[in-house]
Length: 622
Image 1 (tube, rainbow, N blue to C red):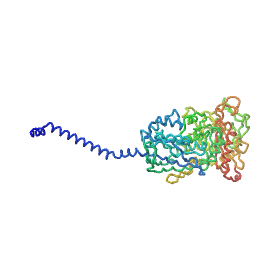
Image 2: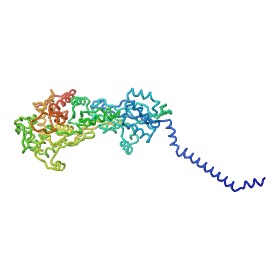
Image 3: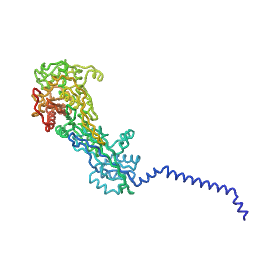
Image 4: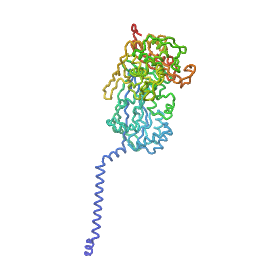
C-alpha cells in the first residue's frame, strides 16, 4: 500500500499537471491584479466621472447678453426671462417618439430635422451636457410639457435669458439680431486662442447681424452652470453645486430712440432709408431702413415660413438700404458740381445759362424736368429751381475727373468706415474707371448725365448723408459712428471719440454760397419747400432719380408702374448758419423728392429741434 502511494506521488505526469495548474492560477491572479490596478489607479478618474454622471447632470446657465442703449440710456436690446425646452441626451429613451410628441406641443416644422440633428450631435459629442431645442415657450405649452413629463424622459423646461428688442422693427437693421452659434462658429471658437471661459459651446447665442455681430465679443457674457442630482428618469432632485453666469458688457450708442421711431413712422410702409447725423462729430442719431423685420423672431428661432416670407418680398426687408443699397442720386448731386465749378474757377456764380426746356448734344436731346424751361438762370437760381439744363452744361464743362475728385473727397463713392458690418461702396465714375472696368473711353453725353446724378453714378444714402455733412461742416469729413462708449464686463470704459477723416481745403466763401443756395431750395420757392420749418432755416436739395428711360412725352412718375417709378431723395441740414443735424431720406420708387422725401426730413428735424432750442440766425447768414 505504501509503495503504491509513493509511486503515485512520484508520477511525473501528475507533477507536470500540478505545475501547469499552478502556473495558470498564478497567471490568472496576475491578470486580475493588473486589471484591478488599471481600473482603480490608471482609469480611476474616468470611472469616477461615469459614476458621477449616472446621478449628476450639468445644466448650463446661459449668460445674459449685455445691454445696448441709446444716447439717453434707453434700452434698445435687453435680456428677459424665457421658458426654454432643454434636453439631456443621455436620459432620452426614444428620441423619435419623444420629438413626435413634442412637435404637437411646440410646433416644430414637420419637415425640419434641425432638432433631431442637434440632439444626435450632442449625443455623439457630450451626452451629459444639456442642449436647448426650443425657446420662448408660451405658458400653455409649458403646462402641457409638464403634464407629459413621464412620457418625455430627458426633456425639461428651464427659465433662461432671452434677447429682447423693445422697439421691435424700428432698430432691426442697425442692431441686427442673435442666433445659435453655427458649427463653423463653434469650430472657429475651439481653434482660437481665447480663454476657455469665453469659448463657444453648442446652444450659445451669438450676434449674426448689425451691432450684435460687430460687438459680439463685448456683449457676450460668460456662462455659468448648475450641477444637479437626478433620479432614474433624469428629473432634477437636488442642487449640488452652482457657478453663477457673468453678464456681458454694455454698449452705449449715439442713436436717439425718438428720432428713430419718427423716421420709421415718416417713411411708413414704403421702401427706403432715413439717416440722421451730427455733422461736426459724425454721431449717427437715426438709421432706419424700410421695410424692416422683427429681430425678436430670430431670438426664439425663426420658422421656415417666416424666413421665406422675408426672402421673397421684392422690397428686400433684410437689406439695410441705407448701408447697402446704391441708387442714382439725381439732383442731390448738383451742389457738389456747383462747388467743383467754383473751386476749379470754371464757372462764375452770376453767369447765366438759358434753359428752353431741353439741351441738345449732337443728335441727343436731354430734357429738363420743367417742360417749358426755366429761362435764364444763374448758379443760385439753378440750384434753387433744380434746373437740369444748367447742370447738363456744367457737367460737360467740368468733365468726370474734376467732379469725381471733389465728390470722393467729400465721402461719395467711398467706404465711410461706419461701425456697422456690411457697408457697400457706391460708384463715382471717372475716365480711369471707364477705361479699366468698362474697357471703353469716356463719352461727352456721359458728362452731361453726370451733371444731374444719372448714368453710371450710384451712391448709398449713408454716403449722401456724409457728403452733405461735409458741406454743413465746411469741408471737415467725419467718420460716421454709432457706438459712443463700451463698458466691459470688468467695468472698464472705452470711449469712441469723434474721428476726422480729412479736412478739405474748400474756399469758405464758396461753401457759404452753396449753403445759401440750399437754404433757398427750401425757403425761396425752390423744390424743397416741403421741408420748411418755422423759426429754423433748413438747407437741402431734392432729387428725383430716373429708374427707367421713358421715350416720348413726359410722364409723371406716379403714372408709371411701381417698379420703374423714379426714386425720391431729399438731403438737408439745419440750421444753415450753425448746422446741428443732417438728414438724408431716400424713398424707392417714391416719385418726386420734394413731395415724397422732403416731408420725411421735415418730420425728423421737427422731432430733433423739439427738445433743442435754436437761437436766431446770425446776421447776414443764410
